[in-house]
Length: 218
Image (tube, rainbow, N blue to C red; front, side):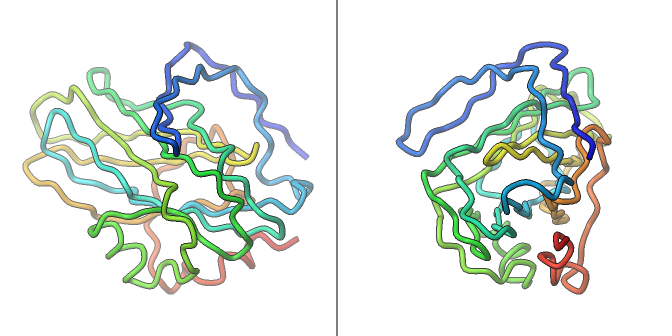
């Protein structure tokens, strides 16, 4: 059993938009992460399915409603305990950000949560990537990439997302250039995420996106 320890090298203010409409500023702590591969999480497991590969052209790019959370555990998942712990990117000029609109829902097993834009819905829902009922549309994830210089280049970014005291790493890649599009979807299973590896986004087709709950079975 391996517990991952995250040491905050600097303090970043993370904006989490509460369900009531208030904006709450949270100071990330140098917290001890719960090892998501640990089988003893009280039946709590989840999957994050999100837009992971984007083409952007603006120096101030923002987009919202681009992720779904599915409860892959055996007990309700407390979405009110969702937060962004840290964010990072590999571009010295750009600033990557991620924020959540949090919900007070106790998400039932084998149900999903997450409001989606039409473009994100086409890739995540209409494609068959996620087939579970989304019983909570208040929860949503937004990302931003600001202060990007002109030119054609790639930015690799990452965020640590915590839900119900379990943390996972969310990698995202941006291709900066002349066009704007959503190019790919990634899925992160809490039972298989290893924080600190900074994995590159891996694109999944429908064929290898099925039976995700079996991957978290003991």
